[in-house]
Length: 159
Ligand code: FES
Image (cartoon, rainbow, N blue to C red):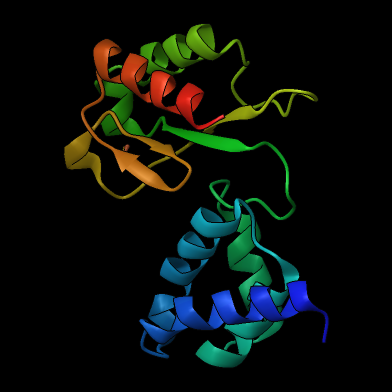
């Protein structure tokens, strides 16, 4: 086994160690993998199938269903803007437009050479916090123009 492979497997095992083996924890595990690696490596899907006793096809189906998950390494930072009903009512369009303006990235497009991508989804399951933005797996609720500027400044500091 190559050293990188061992590191990856060790990191996956430590993410799994804190989760019960029930299939209801699959999505939480995938979120944690996405947060740690920036995408879902194939090894993570295979290990998830084993650990949660779910068929690999079903794990793949879940992983590809949600646009918050990336199947391959891509942009360095992933922003997800919720456009579900609650977020829409509380200004999701303006949130997407402001992030697009601040970052110079068009929502929904992987732009070559850009280190940031903005995705739009329908409901992240925390409507009480609308409008919601997820940045590299971290949830930000009740975002405002001011908090979006802070989020972008923090991203710039990470580069
Ligand atoms: S509508 Fe945005 S979190 Fe539900």
